[in-house]
Image 1: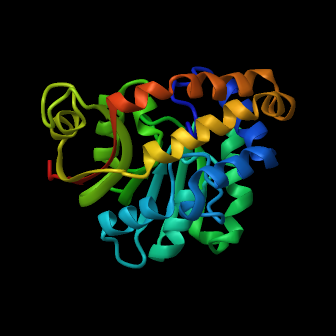
Image 2: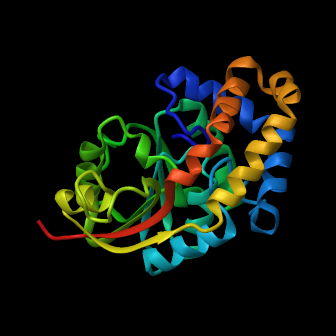
Length: 260
């Protein structure tokens, strides 16, 4: 749903415009690859924090055997979910509010999976349209924090996950908040019926994004020319908040659905 922006785009049309412009941009890909270096998973083609280390943590956290179903919430153009589904020999269901993102994800699916192994749908975090206990696992890369109603989104994830299934996602949390205190991810997850199994810090995140923000600023004129003023302005506004990184931990969270 939100592959790049540190602040949410509030209108679906804004997401559509951003996904289309970013997908068509050679410059953005080049800068992302330069910022991530050896951690850049070229086949995934991420416009997010998805690096090789992160993919490995998702595989380890999901503990999913062959033949399961993975739901990717806020799937964007599909890259991380498609890669994970192939690696895990799983079926993928991608959900995003952006019709353009869904269109792009569908177009990329044959590069990773057989025709009957992936489906993508326009829907929201809090109302996926999926049947109860549909998923063996749920993943979300840089998207779940932008759910309009976080608690409703977590209740929906609890509903579509089978008992014992795992949710693995990325999120930021203020370093001033003690783990498990009010307002933290641990508290939201516990209240929604999950047990937090693992909470780890993505040690690559801040390094990658500091380099990326520097590159965006250095190539600001080219970004405006290639992406258009609206999308480029969103990237440059994010880059202007680079100092906020020092106030946040970039988390990878693994949580298991409890019965009930």
